[in-house]
Image: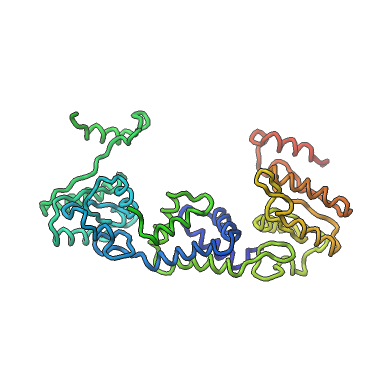
Length: 198
Length: 198
């Protein structure tokens, strides 16, 4: 016995979500079917509304519902600094520090030869165009500390060298509250290399 | 900085799914936003379609898109045996054995005083009505082996005693391929109690 077609289709669609296997998809489907009337539909509406209204900002390529996005339109931000991240969620993480006051640029990924992702698949060309069009003093490379993130940072630093713009990389080191003996040796090495006089 | 409202709403709605925390909801939201056009909408459509077309079967209370459901309409099943389960997914599990040929009854839960769930919250009254309306020889209690499932089975067995209908409980024991030393003592005890002559 199979499920009725509409349940099977729901399970199938839920199975396509990352990290959701057949068992979880089944559990989620029954959860949605058991919700009070209108509740499951709110999720459906949220999906279609987000897909209809959200696009890339034409300046920084962050997700936005107005173009340019709020961060690019803001008069309170420093135009001379651009912080480069891999993903829109990295912008949110950085904004939480409430310290950074420059602009952003979202690459939408990192260079990964294993996955066939090269610079041409990222918003690199668009970054170069921004740097050509406006006066920028510093580009902060805040790609992740993974192999791909490091490769992307290295690639961009070399690419931007001829422009004469200062290119910096966010520090790698021991995370706050991190114990030395629970920190891997590469991180420790980076922390040692990045030491500063007190 | 917050997300644009449509993204925030999508993250909020996804967060309400069981087992989905804020981080996972964010990951799922970005996954949906990055899908090719039309793909995310398929999930939205699957949700609304399932909610619109799926209801409880008026006989067995399994989920169905036609009433009565396929299992209740089938001429190939034995009307004299009803197997009682907690959830629709249990029907699917039982059908996979391809052995059981009787009918089903879905309680939609189990008795759980801790969660304030009593017999009146389950499809117990509906079961009694079925037993009064048609000739049934055996009711097989296939509620789960949890505290709640056992309590429900005990409650139903006492409730059905006066009807004179044979009430059975599915066997508890060592699962297939299960090692004795990895089996908890309650299961072992049940396996011992349920031993049969070979």
